[in-house]
Image (cartoon, rainbow, N blue to C red; front, top):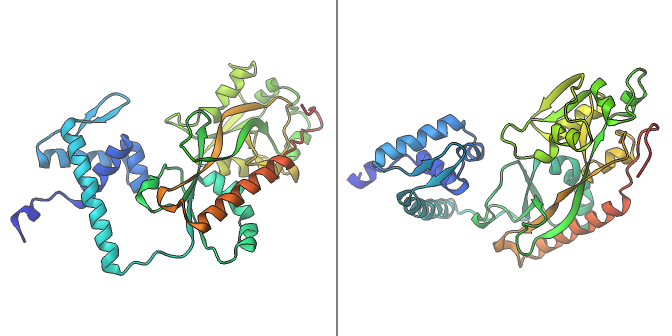
Length: 320
């Protein structure tokens, strides 16, 4: 083996450094690579020791590349892409037919999957692979053709197709509403109920935080009867349907649950989010007919959903 090759850092170290430098977050990079944050941090530290140079400036709540780190990151990206291309060529890799959609777990399970059979009936020759996770993927890398992202309306990429916005409101199983002794006529009544939370230690989804909703509805100090926390939003909704507590509902994501009566909205007031769901096409897939067909179907389904959205309320509430 050539002496220079023996001195190369571990490929895992380089992959961890590339992800951390691209995302500027050890936590998000660790999630992307399915390792712990501490393990990835140790890999980067070992890489810095091996190279004899600091690659990152570490702040209390920030991470930035040093000048040397930025230069090394550019070279590492080129090298890793070249390795990936070489590996594909060696395998004789041929792109699988169809398209890959990246979206969040909640959007996939609550909105896309229940409708996917309709797309298949309209376009039976197009295969769809759904990559559902809650990390942001780089559309420039070529692994994903279309992404559905929940973005601030004021910060959407050029060419993004808006599907719909979102309304936030407490939702609950009608069985729980009908139980005696636990009314839900006003937000103050939530003190007698269990609240279902989406666990968000890094504060990425403040619009789904009960404390924000309670403060906006005149109950900043409310103490619920109990709390349950879940790592995924669809788990929150499953618990609400099972009558385990009150969840913050996201319409249109759960519009079907409200239409068929699995959930009801006990209060008439709803919070309109300043975000929306957008379909974003990867640069390499813009001209593909199957991708255009899929995005057109997404838009059609969104228009149809908005025309059907009607939020039932519990018998004790009134519709706005």
